[in-house]
Length: 224
Length: 224
DNA sequence: CCCTAATACCCTCATTTGGGGGTATTGTAC
DNA sequence: GTACAATACCCCCAAATGAGGGTATTAGGG
Image: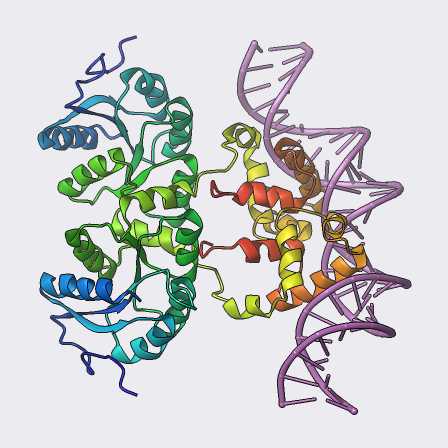
């Protein structure tokens, strides 16, 4: 089998090797043209499916991978996850038309290092490639906003949280790392009874009935 | 009391009004010089403390707020949170020397829209101001990488998760919404004993010892 | 045909947890 | 100077949880 690896050997240091995973031939071709037009970039391989990507890319040894999400059979998310296991140090930038929240978060969970929309300008894509190689996480600005927003506390209840005393927040912190009352007591040099009585007031203030709910409240983000 | 509001009225549409929260006078002055040198930007107010910011900024009506984290008494995190309640639509960019993970996430939780390091180039700060006003979330690239990394599934265990059967995942889902065994049993029309036995195998497969840890595993991100 | 995985259920027992009471000290606010 | 919040500790008790056993049925693969 002859994979479509353009350069068999590692490209010279001066040239950045890009791998492209995109099932639409016309789009794929135009990306190659755009990327090679930058100067200093070479498309070391183009893959029309996730399966091909997993087979070919580890041999092609690109410096960076551009990945579409909507692929036949296996999605770009699953493909990203598998490639990250095979090549943990090769950055992957998602390049897609889709900007659905669930998809964004699932690709990032799968290990993507950046998320660009296909409608981005060629110059922005070039910047994204350079950025990801210098340790950044390039995102279209609408994507970045959503990612950042996802950190916001869900119920926007700084009121409830403000009511928690310093010690209570400390206890809640340990609770949210999965520690038992006994372990929390040891860490804080308190008696288990004290921890238990803190928990009672914490539950009260957060309007929850068990530790799991308290942890969810504490760790919740704006997403869903 | 005369707050240090430079422009009492809303600046003309052509000019972008910036508020600055920074306790070090020399730094504050140099930021004002840099920002006003851009052209099209005006510092409508500078605050040397969080308390002053909360009092003055809502009156100054800036288009964007630049916030230091390390402030005397009340931190920039708490200040961000309060300002977001008062001015939910005014973007806040954190501008700090600190790049500790916990701080980054806590500022984003508090409602920050961007996170720039003070060592950024003036041109990057200008870009950040424009970016945040056009719906982006400007971050220094090292920060963006950390934010994106925080989404990664902690143990990168698609293996363990794949081992969970459909029913087990279903149970884990309810567990992660804070339901008790009894409630899960009712939702799935199972006996509590069945739920309990599912939990045992789930704990086993996820290598955890209690429900809180299981929930954390299920909802976990690379952070911590 | 046997083996395994998945499903669903049962029992026991020690421990943990949640809810209900308390008490005491300290420091701050009014 | 008294009221209050925060801190830290105590008791009891019922319910829930975790751990360690099980059993039975069904479906599918080799």
